[in-house]
Image (tube, rainbow over all chains, first blue to last red; front, side, top):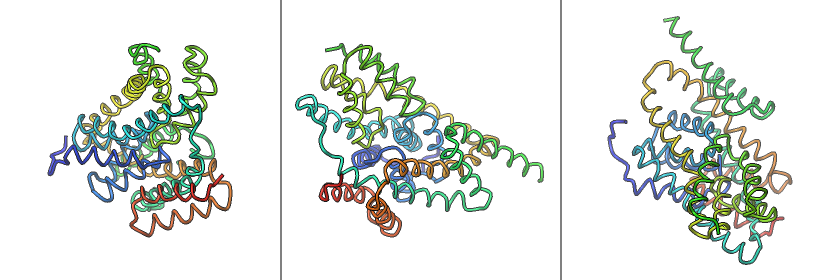
Length: 185
Length: 174
């Protein structure tokens, strides 16, 4: 574990992820963008690099909104922090789905929230793009790294390459680069 | 009413296969819930997918819905805990390995290489979402407005998302 300079209180971790879980409509990458804003940029709970590593792991393992919550929680306070962050993040959705299920099996109707989603969907995309631009400024600003980011984008969107393969290839590129600079020394 | 234990075991198993990501889940749950166990009718299943997409949680919130149908509130709770347990446990394990191996030089090179690719994947997610949900000029106006607010003001993103949802409700977008 890290030498904890100041320990983040568990209650703060829970409150933060509960809020994100209660308002992050759009799910998935929108959650990631929210977590980045709250935990990395505003509260400075963890450095940007580590956050992106966590995001990479999260993409390999399924639901990355939940995974990034677990990762940040673990980073701050170990396993308890991770479980707490994951639980706090899921709780609002759980309560919402349970309430909606109750109504649904009673009245057999899905609530008409479509127009709400049609309003928020484009804004969710904007949120992800804003987060992406911020990340790109920090991590893909040089010609070389920008090219890697662009290739990852193209491979994923145009060729349908899976996130896992993209990340593995990029990791190998990193290894190769490290080996080359090591040799040049 | 199916036993809670049966629900737990079932969703634990589903949680283990879940690593591939959300969309493997729909065909899998469909086969189990609708074809094999008859817990849900096809109609209910599809409505459940729609319901779970209304929430900020992942698509796997569908488990909550199915669990509710099978055994009420506690069924929903058991299904939710069990479907997320395997991936959370694995993520905790991975996070702890990460803290350890971070110090190895080769691992660091590998992780450094990953960083720009992650940025590319973030944009890919935005692009894929946009491809399926941006169709009219109205959508692009909302996108532009949202972008301007989020990029150039300090208004909390949660407020912006909820605000946009309210705008959608008030204008009765369809």
